[in-house]
Image (tube, rainbow, N blue to C red; front, side, top):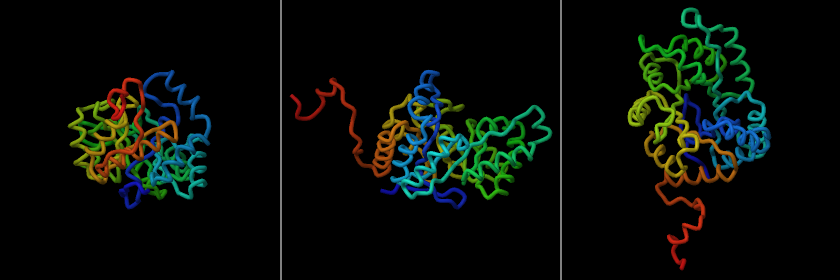
Length: 287
């Protein structure tokens, strides 16, 4: 089984991307949910590797997130050793945003240290995190102030630059200003969860983006069931775009792969449906 692929800056990567919020304890739900994630998988890199192994064997070899966190980096290495598949790392590091940044720009010495670390960890695509990118969006000039500095430093180290954003206008301004990036991260789900404009507007922005878009939060952090979430996103994006999904178990990873393939291939999914007593009345042959 090989998952469909796309290209970002000349690099081939899977159209499904392994998200890591559900690896590291970022539920976007509650403190209790964060604790559940951390207690279940986050502290044990071998449990994370069990999940990555499923994805890697299915051809989903691209991983996005805070790669510098030790359990995640260890888990990627472990999954690579188990499967013989080289993981493609999409890192989203943050950079120091200070009051004098608009006038003075970034401290390139500090930026260099962060990027050197990302390179050392095997990052292929480096995308400044939303907390950095969105602080630099200038609606007056339709630019992203000083992002060109970050992109140049990323290129200098042989990594592919991109931008992670929660603001749809960041994609528009980057395209208009011809910023040297090869891809974008954008929230996209049918619920509009954490999206700053309506779903149809975000869909149009993604469709008209000059570069491939990595969509995130297809399930609205657990508020949309996987079947509905995947069916919407896979049918609303372009063949060059991607979907990022987080899971907590190997079985969830298997379900995500099979469900997505079924949607893309326009066939009935082989995923086993969950059972409750109320389903007995709708099952064929049951009396």
